[in-house]
Structure formats: C-alpha cells, structure tokens
Image 1 (cartoon, helix red, strand yellow):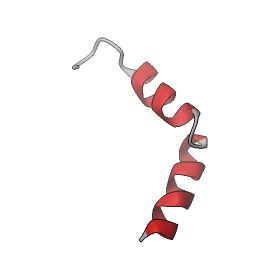
Image 2 (tube, helix red, strand yellow):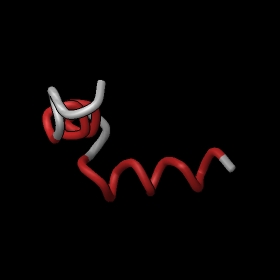
Image 3 (cartoon, helix red, strand yellow):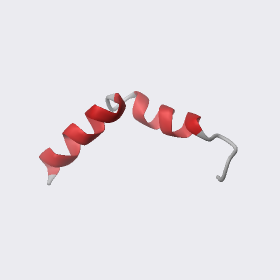
Length: 31
C-alpha cells in the first residue's frame, strides 16, 4: 500500500508542489 501511494503523488506534481497546486486551484471557492 505504501509503494502504491508514492507513485501516485509523484505523478500528480511531485510531493512539493502537490499541496500548493491543490490549494492554489480554488483558494476561495469552497473552503
């Protein structure tokens, strides 16, 4: 299970810009 989550996060935006991208996508849309 741990090896399955690593590749998923890396494919999205590495593990550094992942949070920033998700939070920057809709800063004042819902929460």
